[in-house]
Amino acid sequence: MIRARGELKVCIWPDYFAISFRNPRNSELEGIDIDLARALAARLSVRLTFVETNFAVFMDRIEAGDCDIAMMGVGITPARAQRVAFSRPYLASPMYAVTTRNNARIRNWSDIDTPGTVVAVAAGTIMEPLMSRTLRRAELLVVVPPRSREAEIQAGRADVFMSDFPYTRRMLPMHDWARVIDPPDRFGETLYAWALPMHDAPWLAEVNSFVGAARADGTLARAAARHGLTPILIR
Image (cartoon, rainbow, N blue to C red; front, side, top):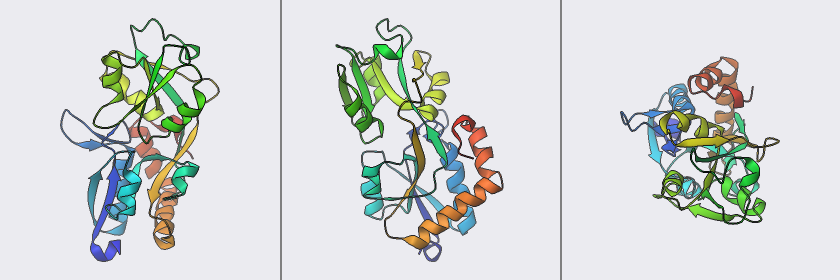
């Protein structure tokens, strides 16, 4: 169908540093999944169309046929697997905490789940159910687009937000107010893959073949290195 149509429609979240990020300095898309989406389209000999979405609604977009695949570092979870198929995973990341440099209350990981602390997560991300079942004393704030976790922190409505290796490592050079707290024992480590429509075995096989080829010929490793993701690359 994709080859016959001559177009590959790829869902992305354009705020995902190092994965599928629209750089505000030049409005260009960049990240490992942007590179790999272009490589996949070239393999299929079709034109590439990016469909911008977010983690709260990307599965709706896939089910509606708005995109053929979501290439936006999608964490594999049982709940998501009820609605979408997953490619072979290519990244694995634990969860990290981000706060401000001048936040005197949150200095260490143990300071996060304390009374009076507000912990922000983006709606629909894997951090939402993870922190919902983990927090015992802190308050959970679920941030729905177009609001952002960064804005909630800077406005003082949240003390800390949770994210992963790609997002936190690339945001540090862009936000001089941010400080990242590493987790203990690889807290919340999750496998990342691409999400596809359910019950389309030939398309899933095609994508998995691409993952294998990209791993074998170094395309995946080069893309990971280009965007600072080598530490979480699944080899």
